[in-house]
Length: 495
Ligand code: 0RQ
Image 1 (tube, rainbow, N blue to C red):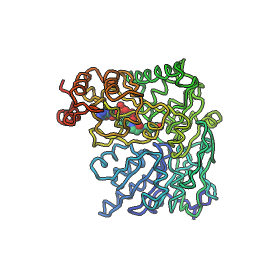
Image 2 (cartoon, rainbow, N blue to C red):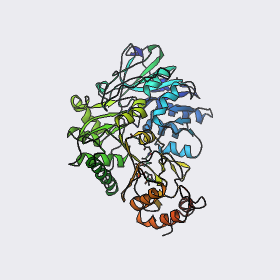
Image 3 (cartoon, rainbow, N blue to C red):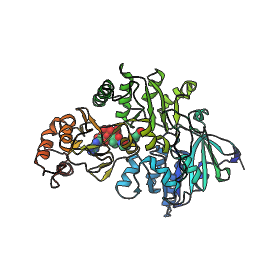
Image 4 (cartoon, rainbow, N blue to C red):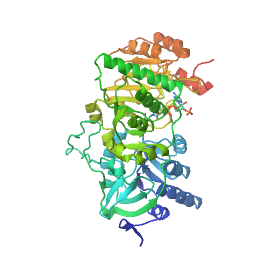
């Protein structure tokens, strides 16, 4: 038997053969960062071959969040997934979920580890986890993300490790692994600053559970961001002016509070713009994802430190971190997602949260996940963990989508992920509406005036003023008229 780190060395195909039909499998991955690659790709090929022979093969898939092409895309294309949680952003998977071919459980990411731990999803048959180092005693150093891997490794019956030689063997210097016990043994989490380190650089895996090691050498394949456009820059500028004014009024300390910024182009642009502004103090992050713009900010001293659960960097940026790891390792902390997204820690640190939504409504509710109430886009991800618990939270969106055919400010959101009790400040490129302390009518008028696109303002005002009087005004006969128009004619309002 060929060995690797004292464990049985397997090819990806041999490892995939160990996964039976119907298994619940926890794969590493939080975004493409640190996602298992070789085994799920081989599993997709095996599923395809079995389906071609008329045999059944579908598994239940857990990850930290979204993943890379070798996992969600490959398995969805091979029709090898029957059930999936907690988040995804794959076009192939989305299509099957929206055709009801896959059951998808859209969850707050901070909730996932506890749900697994308590057995709410059933027995975890296997964990397939990417690492950069494994000792014969079972000490595993993870690669570019932590996510829910510590939980999967603790609870799975059997473990397969993908040892990826592409990454820096020094990645452990960024990791901070700490286990949150279940109630009633749960105790306070001693994270007092965004970059406090409280745990170890490795995970102790029971060596008896490790059934094999697959050696790989493959990049995460994180796509580079689009150059910031005028809309995302205007959104960023509204957020920055507001934060500077809050500081001037003494409602935000001079050194600010740790920031969380959502994934995607807008989040990346906001961070780049914040970092470049001469009046913004050097920043700290307490977020989920460490993305491209933050590398430059850290190098120029504009970002003092960052806590996240994944290093979601394009190849060139990741290489910059590896080439200068003596500088980056003390400044970046990668934690399990139950800590990076922990509501108690987010509230303790007083995080400033900025997340993107699909639509916001006149009551101040927002939809991050479902187009016209039914078609899943990605999932709520960590946006709910941060929006509800932040010291100050922003929900942002361009005021229109699809060339102006869709208004992202609507009378009533067609699906609600963030309700009016959690939402504080909403922003589009048109302007910013601070909803704190406003009653329902003031709130609705402020959202229309500050955030709606001018082409939709008159419609929204007429809807509001014409709706039956109540604490909140709504006309249940008309509240989805814009959505109905969109479904029937392809645009929310006639030209
Ligand atoms: O579609 O690509 O076909 O043009 O939605 O929209 O404006 O490019 O913005 O990439 O940031 O995605 C909410 C989906 C926004 C994302 C969402 C269409 C639009 C476009 C994408 P095209 P944009 P983004 C965790 C942070 C939930 C999870 C989260 C998301 C496409 O931000 O998944 O917040 N958020 N995680 O045209 C129909 C509408 C639309 C619409 C936009 N109202 N109706 N289509 N689109 N609005 C926290 C961290 O710490 C990281």
